Image (cartoon, rainbow, N blue to C red):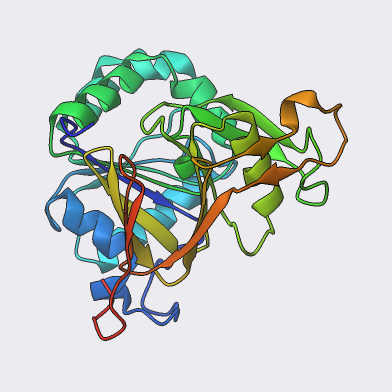
Length: 284
C-alpha cells in the first residue's frame, strides 16, 4: 500500500460549492473543494469533472465549473461519459492522461461502475493513482464507487435485517474500505453494518454530508469538512450471524468497534491506529 503515490478524496455528498453556503468552515480556505484543489497542485491544475452518476449531468457540470471557478481554478473540464464506448475514445483518454485530478459527481454509483469499470479510462485512473501525484475525488456516489465491495443501494428503514443492503463491484481504488455517504442525514448505520457483516475483513466508512477523507498511500487518512465520519472496524468481531440467517431476519454482531471522527482526526488502516486532533488545534 505504501507504494501508492496518488490521493483519494471520498466525500459524503452535498459539499459546499460557494461562499454563500455557511457550514462553519470558510469555503475558500477550509472547504472540501479547497482541499481537492490544493491536493491537485493548486488553482492551475487540470481538473476533470465526470458527472456519469448524475441524471442531470449538464446542470451538475455547470455547478462544479462555477464552484471551482470561485476558488480561482483556471483549467476545469466536464467530461460526460454515458456509454462504455466513450471510455475508449482517444480524445477522452488523452484528457484523463493529462489531468491532475478527476472528480466524480453524485447520483447513482452503479452507473459509474457499469459505464467506466473495466474500460481504458478505468485502467488509466488506476495506473495514475498508483504511480503519480494524482487525485481522484468523488462525492456521494462518486465516493462509494471507489470501493471494490460497493454499496449499490438498500433500505434504511429495513436496517439491520439481512438483505437490506445491495452490494456490487466498484472501481477497486481502495479495496480495504466499504464507503457509505449522506450517512447521518439518511440514517444509514444499519446498511453499513450489514455491508461489514458480509465482508468482515473490510473497514466500513460512513461519511456525513460536507465531510470527506484525504487518503494517502492507500493507507492513512485525515478527516476534512464540517461533519463527522463513523467508522466500523470488524477486526475484533467475535460474533456475526449474517451467514446463518434467512433474508429479512434481524442480524446480530458482537465487538464491532465503532469510532466517530471529525475534522483533523487521522487513522491508519494497517495498524488500526487513531490520532485525534487536539482540541486547541485549528481545523484543517
